[in-house]
Amino acid sequence: MSEEAMIVLKMAENIPLFDGDYIGADKGAFLCAERGIMMEIAVGDFDSVSPEETEIIQKWCRHFIKLNPIKDDSDSESAVNHAFSAGYKKVYLVGALGGRMDHAYVNVQLVKKNPGRVVLLDGQNRLEAFSAGEYEFDCTYPYISFFSQNAVISLEGFRYPLEKRRITSEDIYTLSNEVTEEKGKLIVHEGVVLVIQCRDK
Image 1 (cartoon, helix red, strand yellow):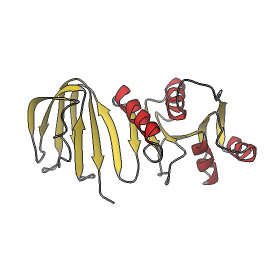
Image 2 (tube, helix red, strand yellow; image 1 turned 90 degrees about the vertical axis):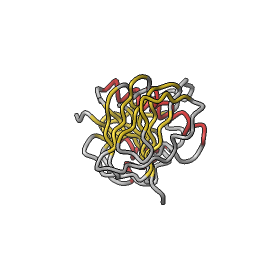
Image 3 (cartoon, one colour; image 1 turned 30 degrees about the vertical axis):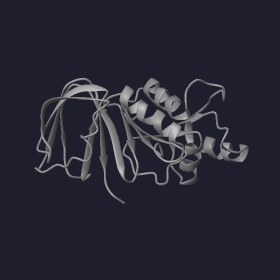
Image 4 (tube, one colour; image 1 turned 45 degrees about the vertical axis):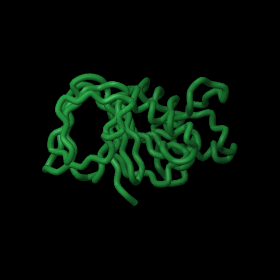
């Protein structure tokens, strides 16, 4: 088993090649099976797939986990929890940002609750949270934004540097920064920071 897993959700338009293991969440499991991707785990209440599709999913996963449709967490949260319970150290979610805004909001909250452990990916965006420490960024994504409920950060090697600046939920000026050197450095002195890296279509 790999240390990292990619969780595929039902809104995934593309499933990237990945060196770790795949986990299909509900309809996302069928998307994997359709593409001939073997999953380590398929998990969900599977209320969005037909019995025939469920049979196909079961052929393309090593562990099939059917949940009660009456539950307190979303399909994505259930998949993340099962991934961590299975021993994965880090998970990437694809298909987490399209479609319903309430589900997208929950998925962003999953990132913020699990700094350094949950990453949201799509063709344009990468969302990840960081707790206290130093982190480097390159120019893979042209735009990098920093948001927090309450954190103190410094930015070096960015177009708009900061020196031990406290940012809160009221601050939105930290939108669309850019790396101007070979590497840009984020230093989180306290708190948790949501970092959104983006590119235009």
